[in-house]
Image (tube, rainbow, N blue to C red; front, side, top):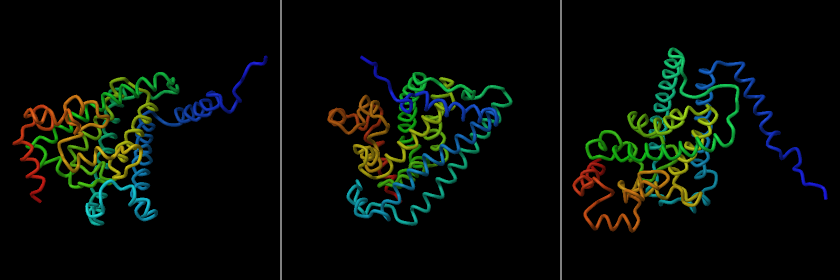
Length: 290
């Protein structure tokens, strides 16, 4: 009996080999600082603006399809002027992010130690999976707790209230935020985990691409991908539930809107541990003052 063989086109080597050659050429042609800066910017442009354009063009290109899958009704959708304001803020935040990244790369060239591994090797699959899983879990913790802090009554009106202007969010609003929030809640939770692991720059780009697709999707306002945006829509509408992305910490702290959260609320704990009814009232009152 002859043994079964995969056709050459299905072998991983046929995929890895050209990628490896292309990566080796890039490594030989550019400095690690240039590769990190340019590559990160390209990932940001493709995986943030790409989904934003797709999601936000559905209204015009496929209005019936769009209306059928919108989570919130038309009266709650942002106006044209609000969209342009959102675009202006997002562009400023991306300039801020890129400038800070360039500054950090410059500092790393002086110290001789980069945040990520930039070498001619291609990280093995098991290393990529390991780093992605760790980064995903740590990002959840960093984002959840920074998000909770930004909802504190003393910080919410000055910082996070800007992001909550859109009670029916759109994909572009994923980075519609105060500069402090852009750094603390949007940038650091994504960049810190791979740096702790000293991940390969390719692994970081994969992780960053996933997170950008995830955040634009949960802000899209559509019921795609098993209602991925529904929980975050509820957060924008109700304020004090669904602070995380995965949901584990929301479940643990009782901020997931579930029966467990209802039971905790009945016991006098509102929207998770450490948030009093007075604080909730202050946030809601401030959010409606405009």
